[in-house]
Image (tube, rainbow, N blue to C red):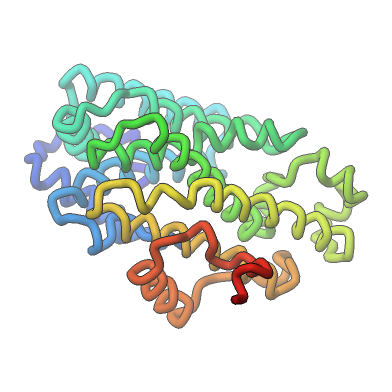
Length: 310
């Protein structure tokens, strides 16, 4: 469906609102994600809105990754997508994704800024493939990941700044987890998300990364990255217990899913160039069990203190 982003034939068709939401649902169902997108644990009336936002984001992300087109062509396509976003907010939508999105943002009072931030991140994927510092990487996550969590909260009419801040921690941690998990895939695209300052700190050379060298320096570096990613999950651990009840299980699923990937990375000793860690059916079952029965995420996976043993 990526190519349809710039075709006129698709937009000349007349889509009803139901057909537009169905179109977004098809995009959502066609893509595999590590973490649930509009799962059955969400209220049925909310799922179409999440699918509309996902379809908007997924389509733009696919454009950024269309390497058969030049950087300039991809940027033009994303500019076109952004123009349609602005027109959508002005009440002028013809593409089915924007027909569904227009209804979503109007009904829920969603501002345009987080959606524009997502597009800024996709443009950055085209123009930048190295990050000098961890703060630089966090600035990318601020646009690429954090808006997603905020949009989901807004769909549930949760607009408190404390909730947004907790969500930002979880979303950034999820984005970083995906970077560490997909290091080999990104290397083939010449995208390096490990901060240059960390590579220098652990004396892991750029040539080592280009060759996919797995050594003790790489393992120490990844152990360091995963430790601080895990801490970010804990910084947002309070969120699922203080949002509306209908959203709590979904957020726990996401939280436990991210933590499970980090544990997988530990178990393979960070050998991501030869094995991409993925969740098995058993892993997913255990994530579901934990999401249903564990409320206090702040202590999950932490070593017990002496006073906890009594």
